[in-house]
Image (tube, rainbow, N blue to C red):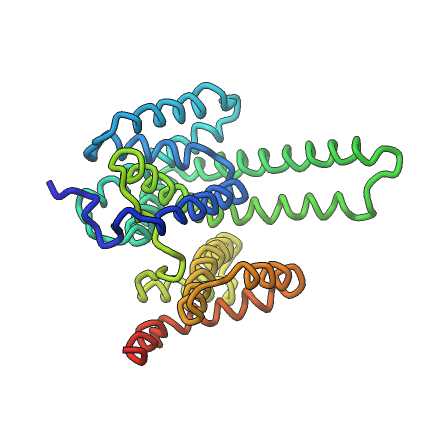
Length: 318
């Protein structure tokens, strides 16, 4: 069997590897914002340990602590917990299988392929049992609505007699409704982040190797995925029905975030990185004109599909 750590993403151990902690922390923060489930990391990590070589027993200790976290401390009163567990087992299994099959493939390629294959399996199950989708959708909406009610209750206690601003409650409920409509896209993005962290843990803990998480400026994926973005856009524009429109909107959000990240990768590559001052300026700009910045990076990411800007820069510099 080909050793999975011998990939094009593997880098020598050195000072640059310390930056991986920041990348892993950013991915964990993304999971917290998008879905907030430790199973997205722990379950794929456990599956990787069960099928790939392990050279350091400390990895099993961390996996055991992770299992204790999701099986011992997380509430299992809601059916959503079991749905999350089934999803993470499915996508983790696909990711491990793809790693065994193509150990030299990039992390993002394997992650996207695992998520895509899992979506196909789940879609086939929903087509065979249409009632299952209604149960999942209701469970997610109920969880988000309950969270919104609890958050408003805490805010009312903090505010005291002054109360909340007019319309604030409607805004919170509206955000929960929007998140419920787009939860497949959010779950897909959080799953990608979870697979990346799981792979980083495997490389770091079981193999003592840096380089599992490449810098953002190197992010790229198959150019043919542009047709997935276009397909989602057509479903939204054509308004073929509520179900198809929802599929299109989730596809647009999922692929749109990936292309925004690709556009950011191009900008970082061309500029040679981002300084601390540049990061502060970017954070302030995001607070003021976030739609403009996100729209610009989205266009750059989409354009990179045909222009391959980074390759042209390499050729020019060379």
